[in-house]
Length: 64
Image (cartoon, rainbow, N blue to C red; front, top):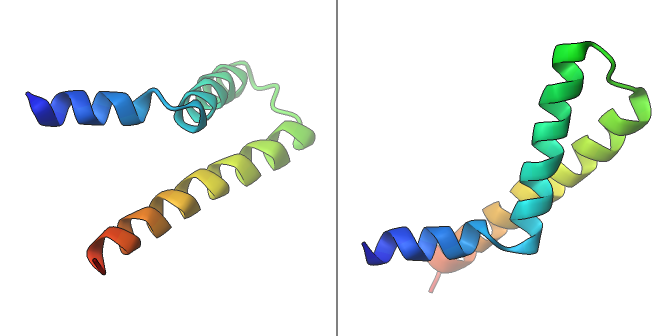
């Protein structure tokens, strides 16, 4: 149960919330078929940043 709360607290960070909200918007626009190039660029940069920092955090914990 402690692991659940730890994961939930990580999910509720600003970075994660922004990523989740943008992903929901992306899915909505994809279903409508109205994704603009500007949104795709911004979304790709934010997703890349999110997963890049998440990957770096995971590597940092392994080397401790």
